[in-house]
Length: 372
Image 1 (cartoon, helix red, strand yellow):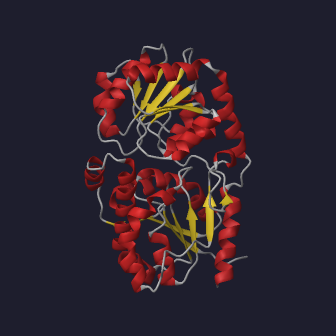
Image 2 (spheres, rainbow, N blue to C red):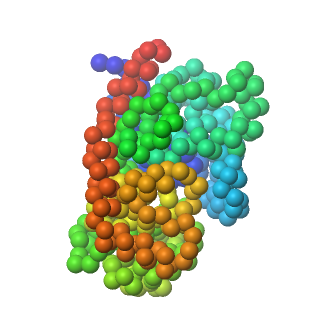
Image 3 (tube, rainbow, N blue to C red):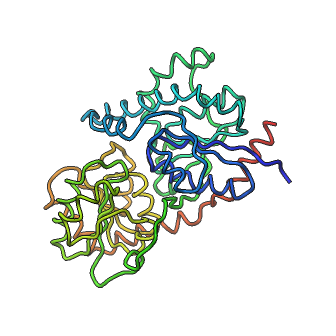
């Protein structure tokens, strides 16, 4: 029997990366290894909510994240640079804190998320292997130009020309949706990792009307757009469910009493939905694909070609601009044309054939054994 490993996961700086890494982190823990998960101050409750030990790597708070999102440049290319820059700044700032952690709890392996800046820096310092686990289908290399100027002085101190490549690159993108220039990687089955809550029967049962779920993700600080979209889509005769953090949901319930409003475990709700409308977020995107549900990406928050690939595949529609009339028309198309659901189900079946997380644990064990 192999000696137990100590594995440090550093997924990213918002709740979704935490949930995306949870299945593998839990599988590692269930195999008898020790697991810590690191995050900024804002996401520590999310880590704890999925039953994993949470380690603060940076004091960045929800208020600071909200301020950063509010000041985001309008130009898509500049948005990418801004996000890459802030991820790199957190990586640099968190390094000393992580090295202090290693003095008392030295990891044998570090697993990093999409913007892979913290994990390889720590792994290089400690001389341990590193793994890159992508969050979703988005190619996070697009954020690197914003990170490079921040990382350059640290890399120079370490005598490195660039960030070290991971010893293992894990990708969760379904093969049919992978781009032609995708990095060679080992594929892993993606499953939802969101926290749970006591369920009500309506969450897992389907009524007489089509069900449309609307969300703008976990980094939502205002509900105005969700309110107006829920009112508009409700005119189609569908049952509308609005998913939002409680701080936003509280103000929406009185404004759209005809809709179900609040945070719902999407892995439970998604199989009962006929359409999922969202902002282009990776977690919602992947959960919809996992459940085989057509998607409407409305006014996407993220400038990414990954959205266009799922549209071209025929499992989603995209409304980049325009008002609620255009969104309603796109939603009605998804409700009436069965081809979108069939294409989404094709991807769902494909995802189910990929290696599950518990099989990937063996690869991690081999990395540590080979390095030792």
